[in-house]
Length: 330
Length: 309
Image: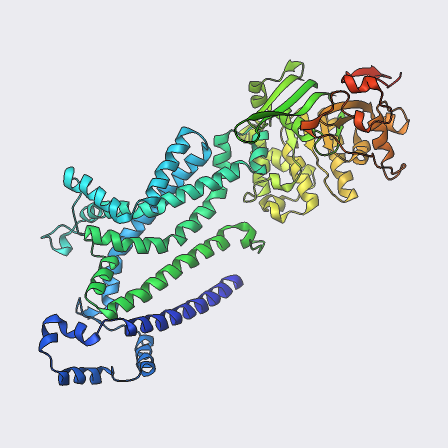
């Protein structure tokens, strides 16, 4: 228990430092970016007809005539009160946009995460147990190919094959068109999730499979594997009794750390499939110079990635008996 | 119980580029172990001690070739027989706790050893409990992970993995490395008890002093061959046959404490004649041309043409 309190306090301190750094950096980057907040607010059509007086009035009302430091402090004050501002693209508060969008993304990422975890570790264990055989070579070739293929390209490929040629999966979106949101069935949601989730899972599969393989090969050459063999255990038995146990931790940690890549990958995947998640919102916000939403997403993604890394850290401490009981750090 | 005759083990290695070369690490090795007997295999590192254990168990790496005869209970120990006997009729006691799975409680590992030894599923629990109490291991130790058990307990757990089954032959590979003298005595005692219970025990060690505390016979290994299989009393009675064995005995602290000059030859630069010839005080021309065969002198096998009856 004592450990958990210490861990939580130290992680919260880390998170605060991280968010402070992100706040400063984001504010600086936005203020030096070519985006003019007034232009972005009034839109392209009004920009031309607007007089300089009107422009100055808005600038004054928004405090744009104040020095950088003053603006930063006022912005930070609002941020600390939980006010992330209004999204100009969706005409909603940024918090609300992120909440609804993230829900959609969460399904996609969870499914992709689960799929890459199961598939990647299974392939890795299979390859490691048969290291050097044709099965191992095939899996390695597959993993290298997946690791080096760009996500958007795989997305397009899957779309062409499954949605255009075979027409067994929908071509876009999270729900069928022309159906009210409350009438969408679970199956329809899943049906729309399959291809995006499959694409997104590809990011994790390759590296997880290769890592798991490496680890298992190392385990099979260990002293305890040799001793198990001396006791009459078969390779399959060694993998089942000692391999899985020892491979699970590094694989799980890698999966948690991989959450950050998953978040990045979701931007491209959602764009190609027109899936209305957080990644799609990020692209929209960037195209339309929707600074409040963009900043909100930056903060959210920082917290998300931080949470992934913390979970990875925590899983080691809670699962590995050498650290949990012995307090031995590696 | 176990007879090893003219055993040779060589490894195929890749030399520079793609040329393969054969590295012979064991040449003409002989050993004989009876039930109720502790046979110590003594030699410095690189003399082929551990490889002998692996060869008997059939767990040498794939690039190893074996020739010669290994008989277990009078019948040749083929690959198939090794696969069915290891862990069951032949058990290994490893060197250190690193031979246990770091993420599995030790009780579970003794349990695994019993299952692999072919103990009936319904009896495993009882046998594990029995073995734990026999080696004075508290039942709370069962839940502990290898990193949690103390050095002394670790020794007993390792012995327990071999004793939990009904193996007839037990090979202890360097079971007392750098241990406190009390722990050495305790571990050797356990081996003695196993022999008294009717098993054959091979004690592989580089520590002649420890070996003499418990062994009935001492096989002296040198550069992958057996130089002499002496009876334990031969050491104290000054009845040793081979100059290397005599030199080893003299090098002990309680004797003259004179180290044996020179070093064991490398496996890829073995002399043509007797393997000990380049360090032997008795060397003659005949020693340099032909490897001496194992012959009986004063009731024990020795590989030296100068040994006299």
